[in-house]
Every structure is written in structure tokens, then in C-alpha cells.
Length: 195
Image 1 (cartoon, rainbow, N blue to C red):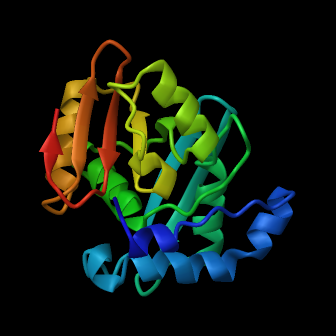
Image 2: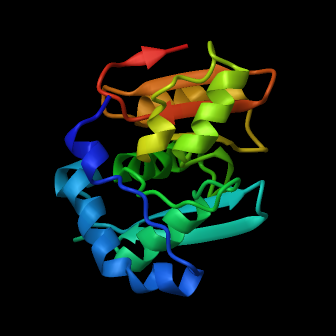
Image 3: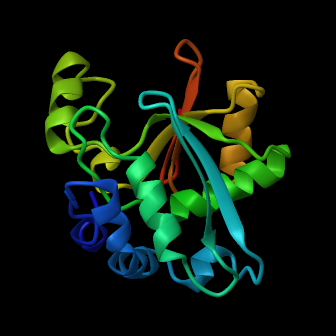
């Protein structure tokens, strides 16, 4: 499991969305600490991602990279959308996930939004899921550190989306295919894994 990345992925528990967006500067620092300009593929062009949370029915379409730096308010909006819908707790997304999603959207030619099945998970939510499915949900899931996301694109076959995710990644991370549940898992763990 991550060490320094986990330290920058501490929970933020604001009382309102407005409070969260007021913390945009701190979020931008945390995001850029995880992912420097090299992780943004040295792009001089902006990068955006669209997400639709199927549990809260919220949608965000945010430019998270402006060609020179990460955009704090956009990262905050994304963190809000990716929050643990069961508890309301908010984590800090590993921006490598955002870059991978952007590159996936470019690869498949879809503006999105990606349908979000699972983003950030609080410790209590992950423990509950692990107890219900000890083989399928790790006790120390990357979701708890803002380093994993489960998604689908309704207009694309899930297996094709997984192939696009693998092609859009950086040579590390996990890529899972769940055909019965119709989603893929992407994480930014160090060891490359495909299942």
C-alpha cells in the first residue's frame, strides 16, 4: 500500500460543498504533489474529465489541467463527485487517474461522462464491503487512498473500455473487468495487474 501518497490522501470532511470549494487551493497543492507536470503527459493543452455519479445523480465536467498546472477548483469539484456516497466523506483523487480517464476518452472518441460506480471509499465503507466480499474487496483497497475508480461508459462495451484504459495508462496500475456488473476498475498501484 502507498506510504507518502496515503499521507496526501487524508480525508477532508467539510460540512458543505461551498466549504469544499473554498479549499480549492489546498486541494490543488495535494493533487500536484501526487502528480507533477510529467504525469500530465507534458501536455501544453488543457485536459478535462466528465463524471456522472450513478448513486447521487451528480455530474461534473471539469478542466483539471489548464496546460500548465492543475486547477484547484476543478479538482475540488471532482473530489466532491467521487466522495463516498454512503458516508459523505471526501478524499483526494490521485490525479494520475484523471489523466488516464482523459486519455481513455481521447482513445475511444467519447466526451463522456464516465459513469461512476465507485470512487473514494471511507474506511468504514470499505470494511463493510470487505466483510461482505472478502475475496473481491481488499482490506486496504486503493479506493481508500483516492487511487482507484470503478467506471463504465454506457455507449461502449466494457471489455473495449478496459483495453482503452490499459492503453491510456503509464505502465503501472490495476485494470479489472467485471462483465456481470458491467464496469471496469482502474487503480494507480505500482504493480501492473490485469484481471
